[in-house]
Length: 369
Image (cartoon, rainbow, N blue to C red):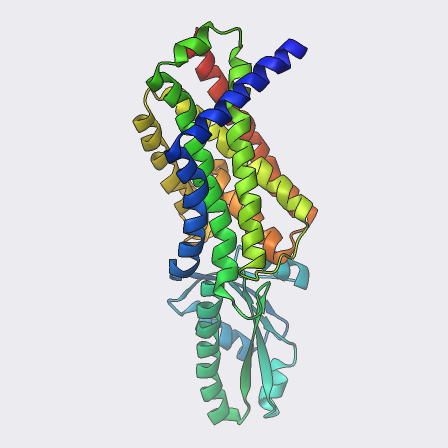
């Protein structure tokens, strides 16, 4: 057992020394993520294309249905979910199935007929600040348009009341910075792991690993721990910077956050090691990283909600660790995601980590044989 640990520790030490002695590696793992953190915080913007909505209509009158028909016939709104209770209403917004919610109280039609002011509550998901601001503005515009007709016909007034959950003031940095953590951790982890074994082959040291007393599992374990450790440290450092320098409030549990980051990075390490195990050169490994990284980010919900994508891509996205990583990062940071929701996203990440690490081990073992 002692000899087993000694061999693994020796390989881990070698990996740290190799990474640190290379000036390019030092620049990639330290300077690049911190520089991009500050650049992306002020440079990245996004555009809203479709708006999904959850509705509670307590009044269920001609007037309320007429208002909802204005939303349904608007080209800016697409899917509508009609909730029976507040729990279902809140759940749709919490789980990011919709961008906004509409709540019509049971006194809507009676207030209109009595020529009394009445309000329609619009709930926007403040975790997606750009979507929340635009969707809330579109909803207010439609309600105000209907209000003009009601005012001329009945003399009543309908007021849209917009509330932003999880980010009341729609601070754009709150959204983009919590996403940047996941994106930069993804880039660093993939690069370090994907280049690991490919670098050994290119430098001619792969044969030394083959003839060493290390088993394929021990070599894989030695290749896993250093990039995982480095990515964890950098992620924690970026989190501290975001909380202290950019004043983004941390609403959740730090322990849940660290566990989520660890499991997410472990699944990404598995992907990187699998890419590295099938590549012969570092150039091939970099191309493999780009091939995986771009679709993974685009399908993660970073640009548009996953629910807006075609069904085929939604099913394929089940195997995308970046999607769960971003949901956990943003949810724990801004919402204070409960442990049940965290576990729901951690289970697929565990399965992805097991699958990718097993594939990497199997492929690497075949190369050794």
